[in-house]
Each structure stands twice: as C-alpha cells, then as structure tokens.
Amino acid sequence: MSAAIQNTNKWDTKTMVAMALLAAIAALLSFIEGGNFGGFLDYDASFVPAVIGGFIYGPVPGVIIGLVSWLIHGLIKADFWGTIMNMACVIAYVVPAAIIYRRQKTMKSAAIGLVVGSVCAVIVMIFANLIVTPIYTGLPVETVAGMIVPLLLPFNAGKAAVNSILAFILYKPVQNMVLTDKEKDAA
Image (tube, rainbow, N blue to C red):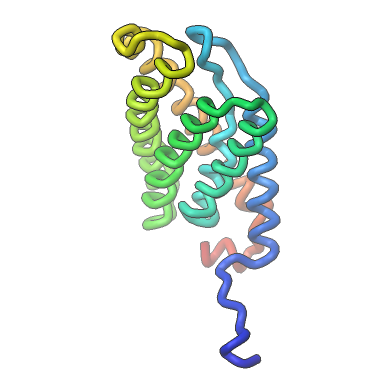
C-alpha cells in the first residue's frame, strides 16, 4: 500500500465499536437518576464508562465517550444547561484520571487518578454552578454561593466518590472484555 493512502488512524474498528458501546452505556446511565438534591441535582453513574474508556484507550477517547453520552442526553431531554455542566465536569474528571493512570498503569495510579479527577470535577462544578445555576434557576449568585458548603460541595464530592469507586471496581473486568491478551499487555 502506498504511503499516500496508508491508514494513519490510531483507532481501529474494534476500538471505535467499544467506544460507541461505552458511550451508549453512559447515555443510558445518564437517564437513571437517583435522588433529587436541592431540586436540581441528580446522581447518575454516566461518568463511569467515560473514565473506564479513558483508562483503556486514553484521555481523548474517554472524553469523547463522555461528551457523546451527554450530547445524546441533552438532545433527548432538551436540557441545554445540564448538558453543558455535565460536559465540563466529565472533561475535568476524565482527563486528569486517564493521564495519571496511563503514565503508570497500576491500581495505585488508577486510584490516584480517580482522586485527582474527582477533585478537579468538584472544583469545576462549584464554579460552573456559580455561573450557570443563576441563569437557569433565576436564583441570585449570592444564594447559589450560600449553597456551596451545605449542598453543592457534598453532592458533587459524593457523586465523584461513588463514580470513582464504581470505576475502580469495574475497570479491569471491562478491560478484560474489550481487549485481547496481546492488547492488554500493550495497554
């Protein structure tokens, strides 16, 4: 095959199918919401497939998985602001977690990556809530700022902790399902 028409894509068909499957699972999980905290905060496990994809394939595929799932969610529910906030959060969560894990692929680095990603996601969500929540709820910024410690911080920290625990438990079994033995050795 000549160099002019050689395929230089990093993702083969199997990788793209696995990413699409993870995005579909994430999209489905985004609709299974638990609780209703403060009238506008709902827990869902949709970030778990995104961070698992980030661990297996890298930060960019992990982010793509998360963004696609929230794009689907936003289009179906017509939830522009929630989608924007969750997209920002998934980027803040997946990128540092996947980068840390992929530098040294150990369970310890996975745990450290999940903790760092959780902290980044919580920080981003605090700022996003200060900017976006007043727009779509009509609440004054001061009211939203007063909700940080009693509501927003514990909710976002709890969501990140639960998602991180689930990702930590599920990562290896999912990796074993989607990668061949040769790919696992290289991963």
